Amino acid sequence: MIRTTTEYAFRTRLDLPYEQAVANVTTALKNEGFSVLTEIDVKATLKQKLDVDFLSTSYWEPVTRLWRIRP
Image 1 (cartoon, rainbow, N blue to C red):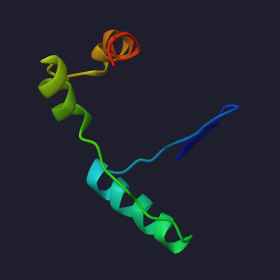
Image 2: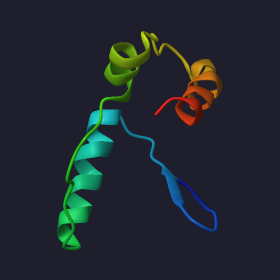
Image 3: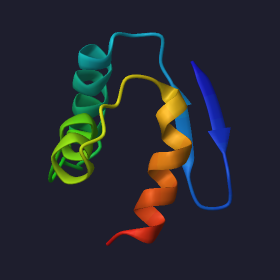
């Protein structure tokens, strides 16, 4: 597990499959009295809204630029 802290966010990288990581984090949040209000499928949303096939991290830079430009 790798942790990074900035002035406004926390990031933790887990060596788990995505589905298992989501389940573990959801359980940990519930144990602390929190809950997940919504889940967003970024891949499906990018395809639907921008017709972008999110295949690799090489798409992150142009996509984040689009998010800043388009509401």
